[in-house]
Image (cartoon, rainbow, N blue to C red; front, side):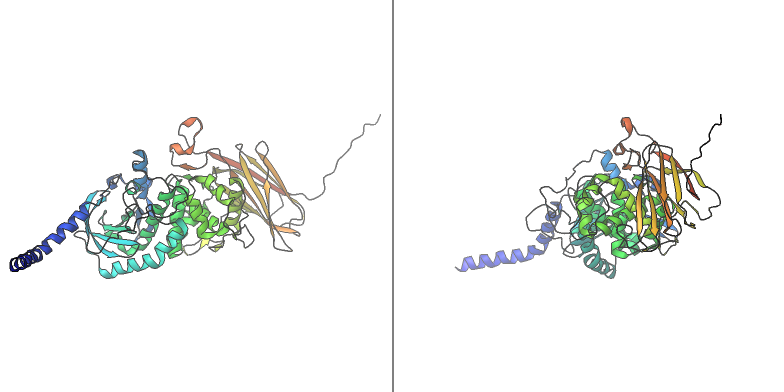
Length: 516
């Protein structure tokens, strides 16, 4: 017994001596068992004109998201390690096992766009782990602020609109990886879809932390959207990314600038993505309109969860709005687009002719959203009004305004350069203030419209025209554009001519008789 007791004490002493040395080894083994993963895409190839999404301007310098670079590189590689969207109605974790959260102090090898780095978990919440690259210093107050904003605003808001993450790494946390991407400005952050099969992570440049909250919100939308609808068109994905920042942090000058750029140049396509500032604004306003009319966060979550892309997904949502929502925006993409354009033109409380989630004003400015701007107007009816050769892209829109009626009927004619035009004749009844929107029916490229009692029964007449090109949803000049014959070409462009005049007296028929 004496010998056994001494032996037992000796073992305890040895174990106590070796314990501290054994603990790091166990932690290292746990870290080494964590799949590192791979990022496809190199920030050395980043071209702002092609890949850059501007979060904001900082001291006159643009701060970009590089997510587009990584998604395009992933697509070019054939979507390796693609995790298909949730099947069988699942909308959350990809496993039923209890998750094992990352803990503060854990050191990990992390893949980045420029190679692997070592990073330490410096702050955690129940749904996020903030990692900082070795050799970089981020104060505890900054990390605490990020964690607080994440828990109170970013995560609950965006999961309400875009659904929960699949948690492929089974830690119930999204990694926010803070490292030196490229110094101040230029790239502020990104999400890499090629990494999505191993872990949920977004990346933030340590040099741009003053704007980290906006960067995190933007990239989290991309992460959540990619997990459900990885093939979605850019105008919807990026429109939702702008909406994510708006939902979390309100109408910043950047968001307003995006929206107003399209409102002032609405002849550019809503559905074709060619990386212009107006593209972001068009997508943002369209997503806001859907949320406003079809059921808020639940509606957008339904759109994101639908693997139908582009206009097809929007039509599915419009035909299945969230119960209790205003709805009534149409059941075809043509009708939905028509009501969207009227809504951005008027922003009226009459459904469906306005947006309920923002206020839009006639004048554009850095601090307010502006309504769709008119191409031309007329209030002097001494002669025929005419506007000739106004160009517009497929699924872009032009608006014309007419006032100053005398009570005589207003006759309108539109001549389009291409087959496939559509339009609306919109006017307000003076007595009730009610708006009426009537389709313009084009036949062989021509449409006519008539407004009775212009000036005493109705006023504020608008004509909207757009080109419903057969090439519609389109990213750059990629194969998903559906070019005729399968080859890439220029996105469709057309022109319209418009004429308007008062009918001052009833038409008469003159009969000339031949005297014999």
